[in-house]
Image 1 (cartoon, one colour):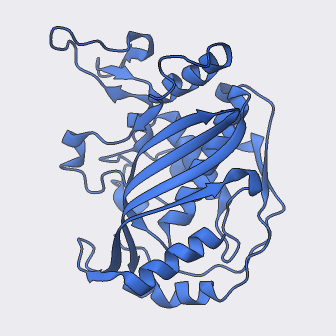
Image 2 (cartoon, one colour; image 1 turned 60 degrees about the vertical axis):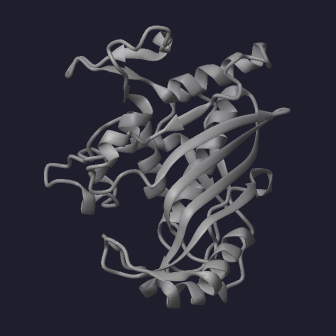
Length: 287
């Protein structure tokens, strides 16, 4: 994908060397933006192998709303560095996607979306299901294209109180959906973007989510757009990325999704087809 290679080249040429919490310096740029037309194929990088199955397991883990990796750990070690030995996480994306805490009562005049609020049977906390809110809004658009929530399809994984103390608060912290004509678009905002390791997974994950939601809503996939607030390359990733830039991309693969309601979809219902790629490039993880 040219847009990814353009991102790599831009940060290599313009990045400012910065220290950070990991102890490994980065080349960093502020506020990079790009967009991808999902009509041209599924944007899984072909100039290095990206592990689709691991990404897919992670996405379904997000959808589960689990606050731990006890089940995810059976399939991938992607979150082990930030979890306790028991598998618990200080911040789990799906926990806030599916069960964002809401106050027992607000100030006078405030309204809360009771349609999507439930009470957690374990903790007693009132929680808002942001993913269900998006799906229900998309379904409403079929019958009412001017539904009031049309421009409010936003999901936040960022809880300020949690983020202030978490070992790793959400990097890809907010995303929004937009319907234009018969196409569903998605915009992701990311506070911290590891270009070599994280961004290829972020592209694959949110593009696939757009495909899943578009199918559920009877829409065509549109664009995936991405704003990277701190776009960075770790200095020990530079040589690997320069090698990747020398490789010629292959045609993009496609994804086949079973014709089922979203709530019934499982890992086995999503199949990657015609993925041809260059070999893996190993990049160390900065923890």
